[in-house]
Length: 246
Length: 243
Image (cartoon, rainbow over all chains, first blue to last red):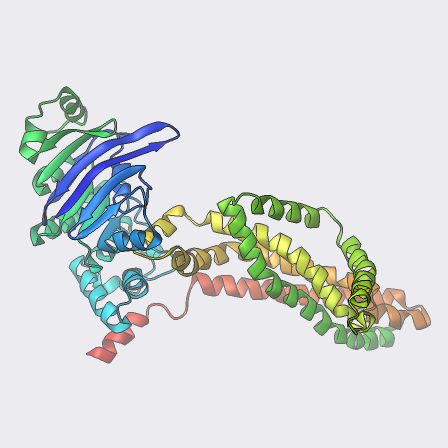
């Protein structure tokens, strides 16, 4: 179980995230939706300390992190228990698909090389890219790069995988292959937090939907409740604007 | 035009090439760690240290190299000599090989240029690359050395090539420190029979050859980095070994 308490973040005296609390059970898929600039990505990045929160606490099973005072060891330990999938994939350009996955295992987690390779290949198999193991990122399509990005995240066996708009940079016809993989992961019971604009996907995959606006959670609940019968005006406005067709 | 002299002096002047290469590559090798450190200071904008580095880079870049050579070669030995005498250290500074001073001057220049080359190259690596490394659990140092610096090196190559050529050509100034480099050898040879035109043609030819070789080498390195020969085999070989 992951308990997130009172995460706050401001840039240049402008508050972007206003004290967000969230509890995530094992196997939960939390989907965060909301307009641009609502702070949902910043909130997600605070969870693995890519963004340094002004204050906040994270409880990950037995471990307790106070985001206000993080030592280097705390930061490393928090990041090793989480995995991140980026909007622009951010595959290491100087490494092959296979190496992109083994690096995190061998370098950060001290897994023996041969063992890391076995894990990495099975992760690549899961995302259907075993034959691309030796390809460099520039030899892959956007969708393939993002699938390697997801393989990199699942290989480290993190307690939670954080997805930052994983399909926003993709051509429309490539979105499906990436979403299908995330859906498979949800079925396997992986704990995930996903920031996305794909409402239909949110409805199918989420166990909990958060609607973010102006740095806070405006509405929270089961996907049917939040997406089909939103209570707050702001949620209704947002959903009507992105023309949610049920 | 004395063709025989032209050929003889060409072969004679070739003996200056090691000096040129020693000065250039010593400067690059000695300058790189310091320049990386300076680049780091500038990127992190570390208070105070940042200002010192900026001042240093400005000072070196805005003074002609020949002036730096003259100052180091005429001032430094006298100052050191006095210092050694005052401390009664029995060391004859005037017996030091002048190539040491040349390496010093060229290293000072290389540090200033390399600082800017590395800084711009590191900043040109997409920030997402480092973030991805950190998110994978890398320490700051591991992220830099395994992900950021290798990519920065590729970006820096064209500028590095420029610097190497600039330094090689700059070594033609060290004759004023009594070092026998390519230019010095050719000039001395010419002074016997006033064959200056021939000597200068020889020097021109030699620098042209050295610089062409350097440019070609950098081209090869770029091609190799962009199209690694070893790729496409790793996984397939590994699978063969384990089936």
